[in-house]
Amino acid sequence: MNRILLLCVLLFAVPALAWANENKLDVASAKPFVEQRARIEADLARGEIYSELSAANATRVKASLDVISSQLETAGTVASLSEESRREVASAQQLVNTLLQDAEADSRVVCKRELKTGSRMPTTQCSTAGQQRRQRESLLKPAQHANQ
Image 1 (cartoon, rainbow, N blue to C red):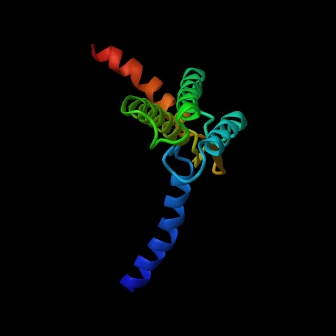
Image 2: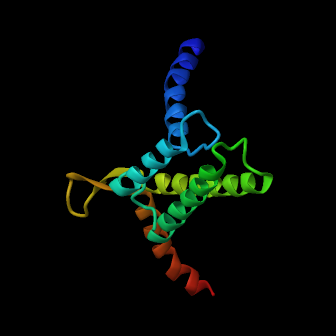
């Protein structure tokens, strides 16, 4: 029984990890940076995966992608970059991955069924995780100000 459960967990976990790694920017991978950049820019333009990415953070992502592009255009590969350039590329890559990962998590749609007051019919309310977080924060602000 435990082996079957473990097998089921592994069967579902491996594709999920592969999908998560597919969305990460990795300039040292075998996949060319140009393809990775095109995929990220297409995802940003579509506005589905990263719908909760602010305009300021989208600008930071694009600026970081420009930094990586300029460094790789002059050197060709990460291995041929100087130590300082490698640090700059690694920093830009980390910023891109962090911003996109946070935006992707906040853009996840979460639905819940609620009973409206005076009704027995449940309704489904869907919103993004970011919207729900902002709503919780706005409800907590008056209580925090009252305690001060």
